[in-house]
Image 1 (tube, rainbow over the protein chains, first blue to last red):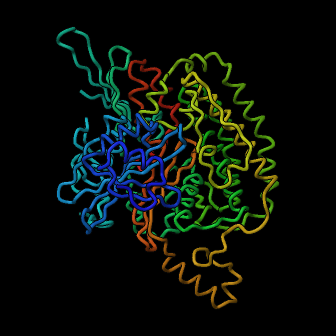
Image 2: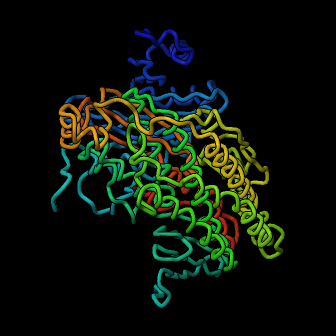
Image 3: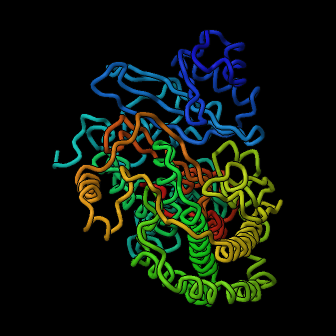
Length: 156
Length: 407
């Protein structure tokens, strides 16, 4: 069920028609559409947006840590459609205990490095990723620096 | 069995038991001059053919995204310079536009046009460094000297505006850092009038040069579908025939008022990327000339006293201005809660700033979608199956900056 100003957006309506349980929340603010997606649905939603709605490009994948609030993590996907000249932001909320979500590398190969970066810096696991290793930090590094409980200064 | 005699190159040879042939793993970088920074490539060779290529990045990771979270919004501008250090003003612009979108701040026309003019000069600057070093990699040494001659002029212009040659931080949230200096018009006019003939010089040296075309034509082919799938943007995509440019598609900072073309080619090889970038330089010259001649008069910073520092004179004579000055300098300004994703066309491709605000004076989260990171991911696809001799030409044509990749 779409709430707020979402029913006015054709893309939100199309996604709602594809899967009524996919959109958990969302808004259209400052000219940007944000859709909150149920984490279990992310791969099917991305597949639908790529193949049916011409979102051929995955611009970036990143995350936001809302520590100490729960669910703690937001995994954020920015999609771009060159044909429609439109962008959309997808967001999945994950709990802090064992954050894991399905990888979208099967939809866009470009997700590979972006998901590795999120894994490296936030410690969020991507199930089904072909090569989930650290990308920025050395392999033996302890901790995930972009988490809010990771200190900005100090030796440990 | 590593051979440490050549810095940056390690060779491991392994005999294949089934065939008796030797498979070689070549480790290039991270301190190899042709990787333009600290990129490390592990290349598996069968004879001279690349079987597998594995880029290894992160040697220049400095945690800039974490650093943003402890700086005020205005302080953080200086961090953006250091990400893509060959296009600092493009980085400044992307970040400022994102925060200004959150603040819903109106930027006066003169500041917008100044921003357009200087980011186009940045594009020239960046493309000149690319052309010089790319030609140097392939063996055309003199082009490097020509390019750096003109680049010096551009850096002097930046110095005239901001006092800095490279880490300019000239764009600030709300407008510009300083009033445009006296005599800027004559200075830029002198440079830009002479520049098209300089581009002709580079073309004389390279475009029909048999060695150059031999080294670049048909090399580093990359199919358009693979590029889109792997997240490649910018001149590489345009050299494959896709007319996409954020300056045209989602105009920002009044780019819609300028008349320019988006050059494309269809061959999608190293030579096509070279031609596209040279055409882009000619288009940037057009934009700079239009901006220079049509520069609107008026303010160079926004009128919002909560965000923009007051004039020096006012600060010394008016109590209220002094209080605002003190508040902005010590505490910064609060930015309304929300999130934005601002995309601009940097010289290398799509540059996106994802800024999340929690309503305080410091960004809650800043993520930079940098073009070099996206483009580098395509390296294996582009070079696998080609010859090792073409590797340097291929990666050079991507025009990546490792600061931009590793952040």
